[in-house]
Image (cartoon, rainbow, N blue to C red):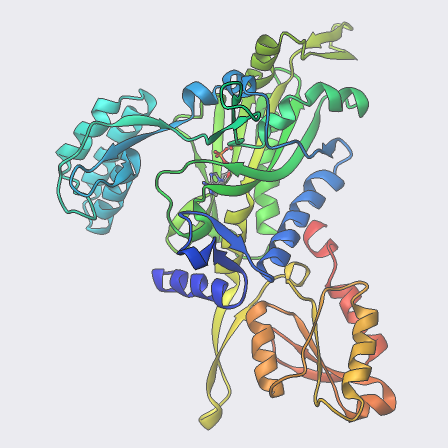
Amino acid sequence: MSDDLFKKVVSHAKEYGFVFPSSEIYDGLGAVYDYGQNGVELKNNLRQYWWKSMVQMHENIVGIDAAIFMHPKTWKASGHIDGFSDPMIDNKDSKKRYRADNLLEDKIARYQKDGKTNKAEELQVALDNATIDNDLAKLKSLIVEHEIACPISGTRNWTDVRQFNLMFSTEMGAMAEEADKIYLRPETAQGIFVNFLNVQKTGRMKVPFGIAQTGKAFRNEIIARQFIMRMREFEQMEMQFFVRPGTQKQWYEYWKEARMKWHHKLGFGSENYRFHDHVKPAHYADAAVDIEFNFPFGFKEMEGIHSRTDFDLKNHQEHSGKKLQYFDAELDENGKAYGNYIPYVIETSIGLDRLFLSTLCASYKEEEVGEGDKKDTRVVLSLPPILSPYKVAVLPLMKKDGLPEIAREMMQTLKLDYNCFYEEKDAIGKRYRRQDALGTPYCITIDHQTLEDKTITIRYRDTMEQERISFERLREILASEISWSKLLS
Ligand code: GAP
């Protein structure tokens, strides 16, 4: 995959109604994007794939939908007020702000590209150590020592490295003087932790069990790059799995493997995924690994799996003064009940927007089609059919002779089960191309023969083959090919 592919994917996303810059008529808003008419369908389908496999396929995992606003004490307890920050450095000439570790990572990549492997390795070790020690002065000295210049001004006139908190805050309450400062949640996970006992008791859940949710999260990312890869408003799909203390290692391994399998099922090539262990897990975790995807700009984090210990529940118990313990009546090897404890937690956390981007990048293809004078290039999104925004395009060959009427009649039946697209304008070849670009797996054309015997021509997106079949046969094909079982079993 290349930079060139990435540019094409970004412009395809806009041209075909998948993703638009937010408030574009006002020149957009940095690192904020809107999903268009086709993007929202694909995004919903990806979310559904996650929800089905994480919640509905597990008897011991349930879902919730917690509010974005939470009591301000939540973020003190979770450590986000004190610890959720990035090391930033400003260039005094361009006035641009950068993440210090990102500047160093870019330098490492450049050393590698230039074949300076030793220098790359040396700098990587120094960066890892400075990160582990949270040594801001060392980060600055590495930037100076490796002669890193600002990409805008070209100068090396840097400020010191400082920590910046990433949470957005606002005020709740009408009167400014009485209003409480509250935060937009930077992760959905805390909504799960504060509801741990509500769900456990009302759902009569027994450890090990999980609580999942999907929803918006907000981070004031200083460096917003690479389209929807790093946004200020994004969506997470998270699951917290509550386990007996002492069993967290085994469950961590279980979820690592299960989540990797889930990605592989999408069929985008297992070589495009890899694990990346964290040298320094976040403040709440004793082990952490990323699942990285091979984006056009290299392998980057798509999902995190964290062994969060009892950090969150313990801190919420302390800050709220409410017991957040679980009574385990099962017997240990000595015949004694495990009794009361704060469960340990394994978290799986994936960004829906990154999953969306990986899906677009992996399924975008340009193919040479036709021969001689008819040689052409088609753009096709080879999405798994169950994820495609539209499953069937219903295309009457002409706008007359009763063809639109019978086409609409068929569409009326099909749309009860499948999202369908109806189009009667333009030559049929042009209409096929538009559906290829949206990833629609099946087009059906309705012609004069349809009026006689109710047969239609089905055209397959991937092979571009066409065949004449009955309406009943079409329904059989759709039922067998457009099924969640393809991804979930
Ligand atoms: N609850 C744990 C947590 O939030 P994280 O590694 O900070 O962990 C989890 O975030 C996932 O959320 C990431 O793997 C990524 O896919 C997504 N994510 C994080 N920040 C993001 C951003 N600014 N824009 C888009 N996705 C983001």
